[in-house]
Image (cartoon, rainbow, N blue to C red; front, side, top):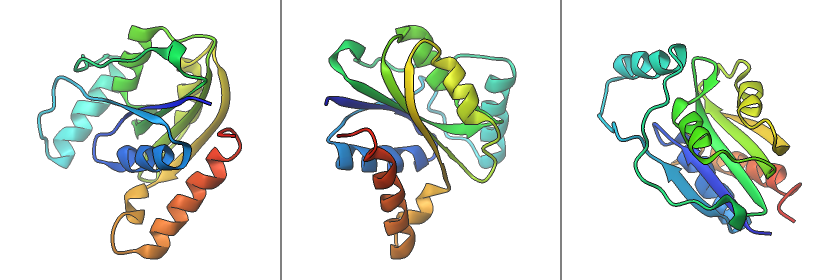
Length: 165
């Protein structure tokens, strides 16, 4: 089965999960990047991201290449911003108009997922969503904390084994 992982990562958490999924499923990675890659402090980032969610703005993305017809399964990943999947993923979905595909979803958050997975599913109406999972602060599993690293890898392995064949 040919798998793609399409994700946006603001602070590296979703990138960490996407890289591990790639390793476990031999997937292709498509990282979405906004044209505005300005570095902001934590508070300014919260206002910037929260404002995009609140005002339903789709931030412009840097150019990417993606052909959904080349994949049997597309896994989408996004950080949670104000209880929603981050707007850059919404931009991607509105640009590509993906429909009728087998999909799976993951979100990364710092403890406030809310209904982000349900909102993510709504963005993918018309697709076969075969799974969704959340990761709370996955970067804890990146670095010196070997137990947290193994726990993250195992959680991902348990999730992907159900659909990666």
